[in-house]
Image (cartoon, rainbow, N blue to C red):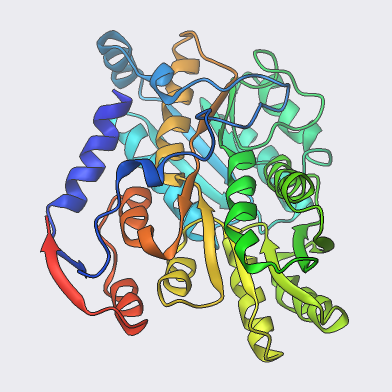
Length: 379
C-alpha cells in the first residue's frame, strides 16, 4: 500500500513534460542513494535500528477497516514556513484521505515552546483519534506530549521523541529522515571547498532538537575523522529569523572561515544573504531540498550541495503509522526515510524525486542561466 501511494504521486509528475539541460547526462539512481554502505545511518532516540518504509504497508483488510472507521487526526508542527513542512502536510493529508481519515486541523507553533504546549492541550480537548506532532524542544514540551497518550489519543511523532517518553506507552512511533546521513552528506560535499588547514563554520540550532543535533554531530565527526587539519568553529540561533544576523556576526568576527554548514535550508538561505552582504564568496552546504535552496544550487550559487530529506514520503509514512496504530496492528517504534545526496549535477532529478512533480520553471531557468543550454525533453 505504501508503494502504491508513492507511485501515484510519481505518476502525477510524469504526466507533465519537462525540459532539462542536455549537457548534463541523466543521473543514475545510485547517485541519489543514501550515503554509505548502510541504507540508514541514524539510530532512533532510544537507540533503535530503523525499520523500513515497507513495514508500514497496509494489508487489504487494514485498508478496509480504516476506511470504515473514519479516523480523525490533528497535526501540530514546529513551523509551516518551510517547503519541508508543507510537503509533510501534503503527504499526511493525501494518504489519510485515501483511507477515509480526516485531518481536523494543522497548527503552526512558530518554534515557540509555550505555543506548542497550549496547542497540544487544545488539540487534546478536541478529542481526535490521533495527533501527529514534531516537538519544538525535546525537553520543554515532553509533559505536554505525554498528556496526549494519557488522554487516550494515539501519538505519532516526527523526527524527535521528547525526553522520558517511551514507545508503546507514551507514543506509537517516531518517523524521521536519516538525519545522521544528511549531516555526513553535508560534510562530504563541503570538504572540497576547504583548503588545507582551512576553517569551517557551523551554524547550528540552539534547542534540544534530536534531528538537528544528529546532523550537526555527524558533520563534526566527519571532519574530525577525515579532515583533522581543519578548524571547526560554531555559532547558533534560537529563532530561525535570527539565522541571518547570527551568520553575519559570525562571519564578520571570523574572516578566515572558508566554508559553512547550516543545519537546514531556510536558515541556510539567510546565511547566503548574509555572506553576500559581507562580500564573502564562501561555500555553504545544508539539509533539505526546498525550492529556493534548489535554485541557489542549480544556479551555481553559494550552496554547493546538500542532504535531502524526502518529506512527502515521510508524511505518507506518518499517516500509515497512525492508521496501523489505531488499528492495533504491529508497528515499529522507529522508522527512517533515506537521505539523498544532492549536487548541482543531479539537482533536477533529485527535485523530481523529492517533490513528486517536475522541476518548476524557476529552477530550470536558474540552471540554464548558470551557463548550460536547455536541451531535450523527458517524459
